[in-house]
Image (cartoon, rainbow, N blue to C red; front, side, top):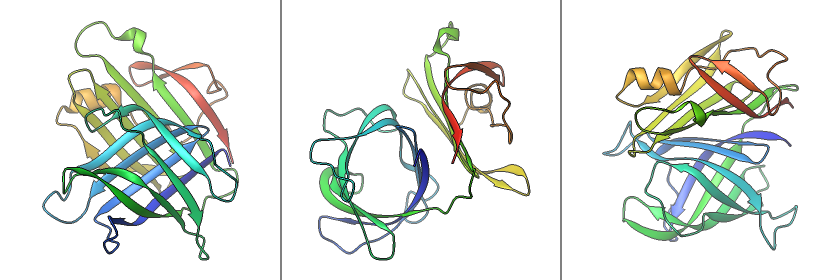
Length: 228
C-alpha cells in the first residue's frame, strides 16, 4: 500500500503493563512517515509527547510477514540523538500490529525497550494521499524552517521545526466536507499560518510529484501524491 494511517492502541515499557496516555496518529506515505503524539492524560495533558517527519525503509532481516523498519528523521520535536530509531513488526490475530524496539521514555528520561500496538485506520477506496515540503529557497530572513504537510484520506498533519528549536504542528480531520482542526501547537499564530497552511479538500492536476505548488503564501514541493 502506498499510504496508510494508524493510531496507537497501547505502549508497554520495559515489560510493564500496557497503557495509552496519548492520542497518536502516524501516516506512512510512499516512504515518508509523519507522526504526532499528544498526551491526553497525566500531568502533560495537551502537550506533544513526540512528533517527527522521517524517511522510512526496511532493513536487513525484514520480511513481508515480519517487517523491520527504520526511521531516518528529517525533523524531530525532541533533541537529536545518534541512537537508531527502528522496530520489528508482527500482525496479531485481530489485525492489530505490534512493534518491538527501544526508544526514549520521557517519564524516566532513559532509553527503554517497548512494545507498541497499532491499529490501521480503514480508508475508503480511492482515498487521496500526499506529502508536501516547503521550498526552503524562499527563506531569507529569520529562523530557517523545515515544514511538511501530509494527508491520507480524511486525516492530515502539518509539522515544522525552526532552526532555533521551535516546533509547530497541527492535526486536521475532514468533517462534513471541511477540515476540522483537532490539535494545534505553536504560540506564534502568524508563523503557523505562514509555515503550516491548511490543505485544500481537493487538489488540481498541477499537484503532481516533483511539481511546485502555491499554498498559502509559500511554494511547496510535491514529494508524493496519489490515491489508494
